[in-house]
Amino acid sequence: MERAAFGIHVETRLAPALSPATVVIPDNLSTREGPKAPGS
Image (cartoon, rainbow, N blue to C red; front, side):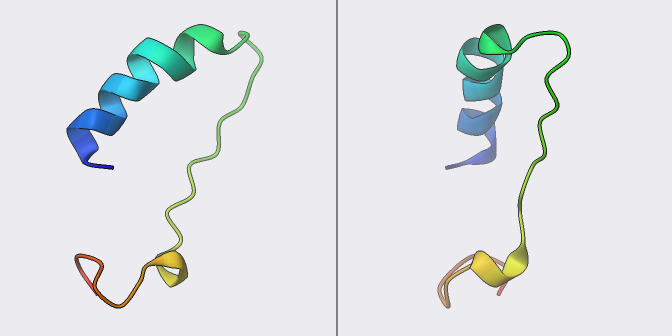
C-alpha cells in the first residue's frame, strides 16, 4: 500500500474504530520485504 493511501486508510477507517486507550504498533520490519520491494 502506498504511503498516501495508508494515511487515508488510517484517518478514515482505522482511527475512527479505535477506542481512546487503544495502542497501535506499526510493524515495518524490513525482513518481511520481498526481494523486489523498494529499498531492498
